[in-house]
Image 1 (cartoon, rainbow, N blue to C red):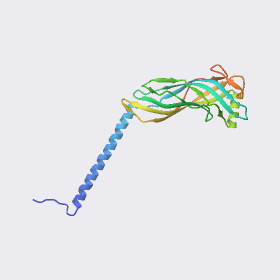
Image 2 (cartoon, one colour):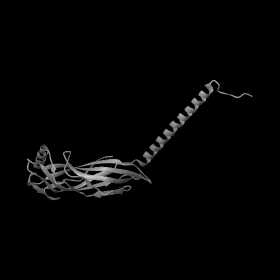
Image 3 (cartoon, rainbow, N blue to C red):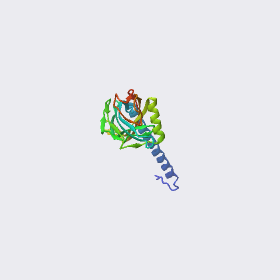
Image 4 (cartoon, rainbow, N blue to C red):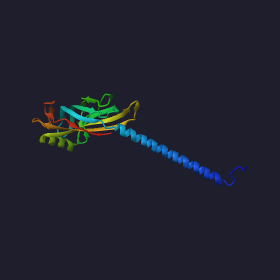
Length: 219
């Protein structure tokens, strides 16, 4: 009876190579299995971004001081609706702020929305007040552009939603995802004082919101 040994190390090296190949094959199979499970879960759940709509924008005050100063004072109330169209995925809204922009310049400070959860197919509606903190100093060119828009009879304000959301599937809750929403609001300007006067008005005042519109959502 003979006993096999690896005196020349060639047999051991071959055995190690076979073991390495088996380990690599098992690792590749495990990765493929995980990817396959992720694909199946995605196909079953098909998560969608929540849909946002700007239902109304009431301008309670929009006042720009004479051109030498170009300070803007404003108070608005925006009504924003969001709907979760997923059938199996819930949405947690964490640290979500709303503010107004004019030509990519923020004209109000962020207003924090209440933390909330949106179940399957649920809809939430928020109506936050948006205000400038004391005043916002506009670049002179921007103040001139605002005056020109008012003279033309149309002012475009962007209502922005910025914050963090989490997805919920069964008992599993994801990490945070950055939510960015842009809702364009087209306002018509009634006859009256220009932007360098003390303009005030509500839904039937100096500025009129045209119609509800969908928002661009990025997660």
